[in-house]
Image 1: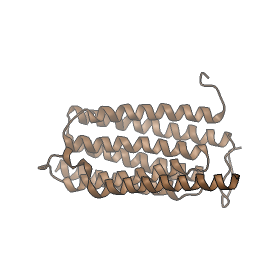
Image 2: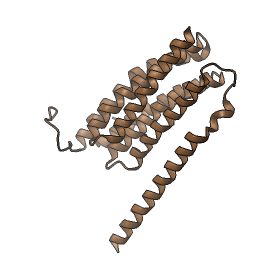
Image 3: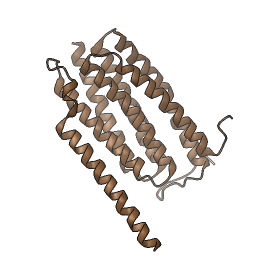
Length: 130
Length: 104
């Protein structure tokens, strides 16, 4: 009974990771961010490939969040994902010529820093008001 | 000229990001993953922000990029240090081929 249930959990986990892989690969192939870009910008190809590379790195971080053996691995993956999002906000701020994308980046960096400190203190076993 | 130098900085930062996340994907231990990923991803994202500042110039967005760079350069090693200390105190084990443990 227990063995059968464990096999079902493993099957569900493989299905979720295959779905994630399909979503990331389709986002790499079809470039849904094409609408947001100005077509007369110089070095547009490098910016497109850069977004693809950051999405691939984010897939590695998501894999580590999904299949880390312990809690600390998952927290490391979330921290790295928060730093990568600041980079993709900077690239979007170049390619769309809007200045408020960097507001999102600054707010995301601050929130990620505070959440990582709170998770570390929780993992250490202390209370939050120390 | 500023555009070319900025795009060179952005390409360097993208390479560092990809290599750091590959280290996060492949290494066997929590401490190895922290060691590989934190420094590479922080340096890569700071390069991307500095290249963005060089491309955009002294706009509102460029000044915001410099602010995010300074904040990220101070905050990311702090969070990594706190996370490693918490992982060691909560009883994470080292991997099998590790040489020594100085922090006890």
